[in-house]
Length: 470
Ligand SMILES: Cc1ncc(COP(=O)(O)O)c(C=O)c1O
Image (cartoon, rainbow, N blue to C red):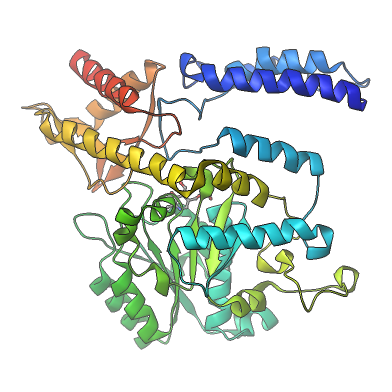
């Protein structure tokens, strides 16, 4: 494809993108597709000769788009949002165009220095003190693995990194029963062993109980096991519960345990001053993760990872083979030393575009709108005799179940499963579920960029009508 063809097709694509973004609400949120259906439509081996771009684009529109789930849909109420926005998409296009691999300062000085600037802007936006430094990771799962590896290095004073885990003391990690599964995965991958993860029970609002945490830490110490890391959640996945971070931080300080705060979804809300209370104690963490790719209108993937002690991070990850040495190493940041991977995408560009396009106030307004709509929906649920709210609503997630009068408890799980299937069959909204206190619970997240009051009203109407028809 020569530059002129590229220009022509690029214009066609941008026209398609603009139409898609403005028309996505008319599409079903979820495709009605059986497993294997898309694959059967595609050739089983690669073409031996190059094809015209028009053929590729036609197949994209006709074969691929109908099989996509539309995360951009204002009826997106599933999982957590995976937002993008026009400035972020344009930033991604430029990142792809530059094609830079940003492992070291020298491999693209502007990419490294922009990442430093943007991470510092975001640090200020979420109210973290100036001694935190940030780096963009691909996902919160990776960031939590990085935290667990740093904590291991910290607890073993580097012994594990030099001689393997056999040489180090036995270590333990603590997280609430509701902490995300990336903690289990990280504990496994970082070599602690899954049996060294202590799942600490929570209170009635699903937040970690610090008294139980203290008991678990003391039991491990008495057994000769070294407490290495506590993962505190601000905004759990099931219900957006907020762990009592100040009390947890005090325990971590007393026992010299690494404190990692997982605010993957909710962290974006820290940019709103009146929501900052939920983030009390976060400024005592050793590491923090939040995902601009969830609630800050930035294309997946883009995870912000903050640490207070940059040297501890470098101690765990820095490694410079001769072929990567440069004359500037002593005076620059080489982000390859701030995480697991060597090669890095230029992710700071899209986040920079988003923050500059919306401004801090524009982003605050989006989050305020979602939080206010969730509070309103929570009131509607509370006011409905046949629905039960299952958890507090600090951010944009409402957890509820259908509980018609006279239905015995042991039939409610199956009833709500059927209800969720009926709601999603409408094609106009997409909701997911979890279990809270063992009960099947429907989750409705309000966090998609374009979701407004009328969409939430429509979702609530669909839910009530589907319940009435059960
Ligand atoms: C609280 C929490 N932590 C971590 C994750 C993992 O995020 P990622 O997909 O960026 O790895 C999620 C995903 O929803 C989450 O809700």
